[in-house]
Each structure stands twice: as C-alpha cells, then as structure tokens.
Length: 261
Image 1 (cartoon, rainbow, N blue to C red):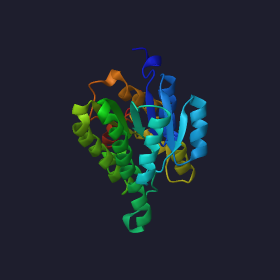
Image 2: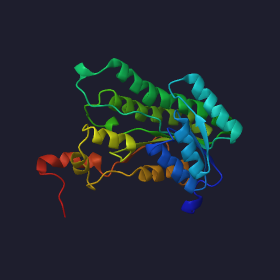
Image 3: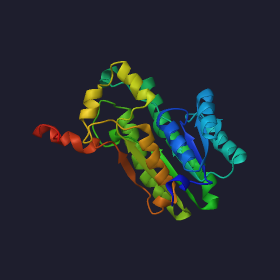
C-alpha cells in the first residue's frame, strides 16, 4: 500500500486534535488520505487545524460523558462512519513531591488522561461494533513503565496502557483493533511550556535517549497512521514506544552513559 494512500477514504477522529501530538496525528492522517474529525475543548484551534487539513472540527470535553457521546454522534452524522480514532486529549503535570500535590490537580489529570481516554474509546467502539471493523489508538507515555516524580500522570498513563490490552481482547472478535503509543519526550507546545518555566531540562531529556534527541510530533503521527491502517491488520493490544530510545538509555548510566561515536 502506498504511504500516501494508507488511509484513503477513511474517517479518522482525533481527540485533543487542536494542538501537539493530536494535531500531528490529524495532519499525518489527512496527508495519507483520511478525512479527519478534529475534536477538542478549544474550538478555535480545532477549526484552525481542521481548515488547514480539509477536515471538520467538533467541540469535545473528554471529562463530560454527555459531551463525549454527543461529539462522536455528531462526527457520525456530519462526516459518516468512523473508521479509526486516536485519543490524544491529555494534560501534563508539574513534578512535585506527594506532600505538595494538589488533589484537585491530581483528580483532573485522571479525569482527562485516563477516564477521558476510556470514554472516547467506548463511544467510538459503540459506533464501530455493529459494523464489525475499526482501529483505535490511545496515547500513553513512557512514564507508564518507568518511575517518575509525576505521581498522577505516570500511573494514569500506566492505566491507559493496561486499558488498551483489555479493550483489544474485549473488541477483537468484533474486528476492532486497539493499540497504544508510548511517546518519549516529544517537542510539543505543552512540553515546551514546561521547559520555558524551568520544569524540564532539555539536556537531561536528550541525554536520556539512545538517539540523543527528542521526538518530533510528526513521528508520533506517522506511527499512529500505521496502527490505524491495514498495514497493521494483525497488530492489536500493543503499546508501542516511540521514544528515541528512552527506555534503553537509562540503564547505561552506571557504565558512563550511552557511548558517543
């Protein structure tokens, strides 16, 4: 299958599609032939992305069940049957000691990152199940499998990775594939804001990868397009790291770090 036509004619819904990784996923999907529904809490940004890629924008608050139900019903009504979806709506966390963690912030992270992922996947699957086909991709994180000082974000992403395994088994016999991507440090506007505030050190992030660099949003979008496509027709229940080698760099530190050639 030609890459340019990988998603030709398919309707792909992307939550959190107005910025960052979500916008990159929407852009790559559109470049590969998909008609993209850009769903986001920020309607102006969603419209801007949708207009740029020839898609359509929809208001979505993933913490509100009624909003989720209505948003995906609107996509089906206005665009047609959803063939695939990416759940990229999420928020980041400032690393703080547990004693300094605001529980309202803690709860909000879970509501958006985990509960919102579940609700979005559930609603898309409800539309897909009678048609007995579809592909869903959730955004997890490398923090799902590593200890970090992100005591709400990391465990919430671990829950997303676990959820994907369960839903892949739940819906597999109905022809619906469910996978996740675990991005490493990705140069999104949200992460850049954390860097600008002094909450992230670029040298530490790039040094803690085998490739010695951060991930670009388009690289996440490319993997998402693959997982949504028939090229990944036998791939389900997988959480795929797109991390520039983050998982394999840290264990080299006691030996002087990854060698520079």
